[in-house]
Structures are given as structure tokens and as C-alpha cells.
Image (cartoon, rainbow, N blue to C red; front, side, top):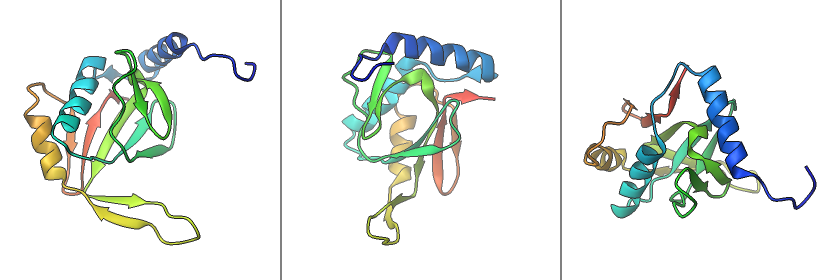
Amino acid sequence: MQKNQPVDMMALRLEAKKFAMENYAASLMSNTKWRALFSALERAGIDASCSVKFIGDDKECNIVAHPGLYPPHAYIDLWPLNVYPLVEIEWIEFRRVVRYRRDNNLPAKLVPQDIDAILAVIENIGKRFPLEVSEDAIRVVGHVK
């Protein structure tokens, strides 16, 4: 791909959808359910930080701001990362203690997060979400192997 060439987001979405169908036993979240989840948290005024794992990727990324819902329906802006097709989300996790990396070799900053309030918002959306709930975290599962 040449530098500064526009990204074909539809092709990326279709490629991700195909990858998910070939490599996961089931997809549990739709675009509508992801957007309902993020919209409800935003409406509730909860600044929920989360970790997100994308399909086909071994690492997880930390998101410290509300996902942007302004892209077209099948996409989401996960700043500071990029705009992604929702189908690429394997899972997101809200942790009771959020670790923020700091510069200059300082230890990570640990910030508490009210996952009980997050869970209450999720449970009041009116949709069933594939949740894995523990004392330390809430995981919303998009795809299972």
C-alpha cells in the first residue's frame, strides 16, 4: 500500500468478519449490541476505561476514553488506537483497578474503577450480553474459540 492512500474500511471489515468465521466457534456480539453497550455507558456518564483484545492479535490494548460512536454503524473509534470494525473486538474488559503507564521509568499509576456501576448499566440496557464477571473485572465477550 502506498503512503497516504485511503484505507478501504469496508474491505477491512469483510476481512475481519471472514477471519472470525474461520477461526472462532461463535460470534456473540453484533454491531448493534456493541454500540448499545458503549452508548449506555456514555449516557450514564461513566468514564469507563477498558482493555480490548482484537481477533487475530495476541496482545490487548488499553482504552482510556469513551469509544467514538460517530463512524458508520459497523465501526467504532477506539482512541488513541484507530477506527476499527466492531467485528474485530474479541473481548473488552473493565477492571476494578486500571493501570496507566507513565513515562520516565515511573511505575504504573493504579486507579480504582467502579465496575459495580458499570455492571449495573450493562444489566439495565435491556439486552443480554455475554459477560464473564469476577471480583476484579467484567469481560464482554465478542467471539469464542
